[in-house]
Structure formats: structure tokens, C-alpha cells
Amino acid sequence: MRMYDVIETKRNGGELSDEQIKFFVDGYVSGQIPDYQASALCMAIYFRGMSARETATLTMDMVASGDVVDLSPIPGIKVDKHSTGGVGDKTSLVVAPIVASLGVKTAKMSGRGLGHTGGTLDKLESIPGLSTSVERDRFVRIVSEVGVAIIGQTGNLVPADKKLYALRDVTATVDSLPLIASSIMSKKIAAGSDRILLDVKCGSGAFMKTVDDAIELARSMVEIGEHVGRTTVAMITDMGRPLGNCIGNALEVAEAAATLQGRGPKDLTDICVELAGNMLFLAGKSQMDDCRRLAREQISNGEGFAKLKEMVAAQGGDASLLDDAFDSLVQPRVAREVRAQRSGWLYAMDTERCGIASVALGAGRARKEDAIDYSAGIVLAKKSGDAVAEGDLLATLYAADEALCDEGERILLSALDIRAEEPAAIPLFHARVTRDGVERLDA
Ligand code: URA
Image 1 (cartoon, helix red, strand yellow):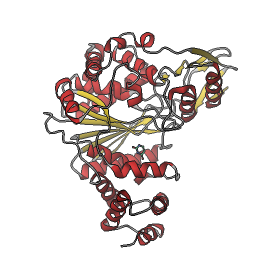
Image 2 (image 1 turned 90 degrees about the vertical axis):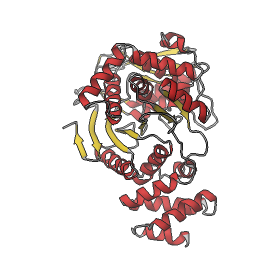
Image 3 (image 1 turned 45 degrees about the vertical axis):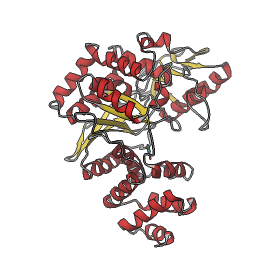
């Protein structure tokens, strides 16, 4: 078989055979197929797409490129949750402890910040002492005893994705539906959980900008999950504005802790209840309505917060800092208030630019080896749909020095569209996708 023919088949809009896909994945991981041929194929896939069979085959060949985690020593149904990435998305830190506090085990492997989006590992590491590089046996022990652990990817999990993702990142082929679906699902399947909840973000801060694209991605991932016997549900949720009010690592941990203490912003609380409810449903706890009620109860009775502290302590972190995390965890050198230059309505937010502003303040990395300033970030005082009077506080920026604040302020202001007219309300939930079909929630 020649890689040239594989590329040509896809370039001409043909369907690749299972053998051709395996040839590509194996050859690329072993180094026999060079980057230039792999990138040509990614670009052909970007333009021509893939059938459901091709996407499922690609996913499973990627899974087979490395190790698969065996979670069978942990008793009970293990449910995983994955977000396709957004700005201010700290839901894992709220949702995983809620479901664990109700006996549903969550063995979660998370990632670092990518581009303008934040990563759960970076957020957790803003807690002094906490380690996210936990070896396999200890991970299994913490999940068995505490019910939840969130760690970085261990071992040789899906090396094909590591290589392909890095290639896609520099060849303008990240936002291809079959390539995203196979990248995410290969990691979820290799991570070993029995059931999978996907939070597919859509809007200006997400990879998928429209609801229709997000639904198509969700359908593809649900189909792959079900194909390999992992019951999979996807929620399509809004990322047309940042989630909650805080963007930045320690700030987001503080906001997650406050949410579990019943003091969180409404959008974040509602989305966490819905996601936790879906995870409980997937674990077979009860009917959907009852699962939502149970999730809300774990916030009001404090058990979700107690579970977060237990997890943080088990991973070596100082859990006492979470009681009053905005004061004890967030210690910026400089704070800057950004005020409205005119009156009207905050009509829209370019959420991706809000994420870029936070990265510019020091909360993310410009290069892989850059260090993060855990206290850097943004606390939004206004979000899309809010009325604004000239001089009102729009946001407070946190950084290590004034020059970083200047840059963050410039970018953030360019992301905020203040107009005289009031915008239409944007729903938080757009759809729920299961093997039975698509249920629209925003109609
Ligand atoms: N997240 C992933 O893990 N992979 C993608 O391709 C996009 C988002």
C-alpha cells in the first residue's frame, strides 16, 4: 500500500477502506509516514470529511496505538465527562465531586490549556501541594476510596492523537469534525470509563461556532461511543459568553468552590446541575428529573464541597484554602478595574478574545514551556445581555504587573460589543444528543 494512494482517494472524495486507515495510523505513529504526507491527508479529510464508518475506524485505530486504562479494579459504573473546551469552563471541578458524593465513581484524565481555552490540570495545580501526575495504582486507589480523582494523562495513552494533534495545530486542520471526534473519543475510550458524558460547546469561544455544527459533532461522537459499547450522551451548551464570571486558574478554582458552597453564579450552577444530573442518569441512579434534584441537593447540603476538599487532600493539595478561596488562593500583584466608556447594553462578547485577554494577563501559555501565573485572570462584572452605564465596572483584571494589565485591558475591551439596543436572550442549553436522537432545548 502507498500513502500517496490513500491521500489521492480522500482528495478525490472517496471513502477510505479500514486497511487504508490502519495503514495511515500505524505508519504515522511508527514514523514511516512523514509529517508532510500526514498533513496532506488531514487537509483532504478537512475538505472531504469522513463517513461514520471511517470516523469510527480511525478512532479505534488511534485507541489501539497505545495503552488502554483498566478501571475494572474500581467497583461500580465509572462515568467520565469531557468538555470540548471553552473559556471559564470549570464545570469538571464542580460536577465530578457532586456525582462522587452520590457514590458514582469518576476517574478523570484532563488536559492543559490549549490556545485561548483553559485546562483543568492548570486550574487544579493552582492549589499549593496538589499533584496531577499520579501514577496508575494510586489513581485507582484514590478513585476507589474517595470516589473521584482528576489527573493528567498517564502512560502511553493514544500516542496517535498526541502526534496528530500537534500536526493539526500547525496545519490549520484542528477544526475538522471527524478529526475532532476521533481525537476526543479515542482518549475517552482509552481512559476506560463505562459511560461518557460530553459537553459540546458552541459559540464564539468554542471550536464549533454554530449549533448545527456542534450537533453534528455530538452525533458523530455519540455514534462512536455507542459503537464500542460505551453509552454516550452529549449536551450542546452555550459558549457565546464565558461560563461564570471568572477566567484564570486560581480564580476558576475559587469560583468552582463557591459554586459547591451554594454561592456560584447562576449560569455556572445551572450548567453544573444539568451535567451532574446527566452523569447520575448515565450511572443509572434515577430518572433525569430526579437526578437534577439530587445534584442540586449535593450543593445545598455541602456534600459536594466536602468531596472536592477530600479529593484535593488525597492528591496532596491544601484543602483548607478552599473554604475562602478568593482570599487565600488568589494573590495577584496588580489589580485593574476596567470601566465602560459608554452606556447601552453589553450586546455580545467575543469569547475567544476574552480567553486571549486572560492568556495575555499571564493565565495561559504563549509557548509550551511558559510558566503560568496562577493568580492572573479576569473577573467579569458584566456579561452579554446586561445593561451598562458609562463608568460602570465591566471587569477586574489580575496580573503580575501594569504592562500585562495594559495588554489584557486592550484585548478585553476589543472583545466587548456595547450597543444601544438590547440583545435577544441566549439560551444556556441548545440540545441533548443520545443514541435515540437529538432533543432541541432552545426552541
Ligand atoms: N479537543 C481534543 O482533544 N481534540 C480536538 O481535536 C479538539 C478538542
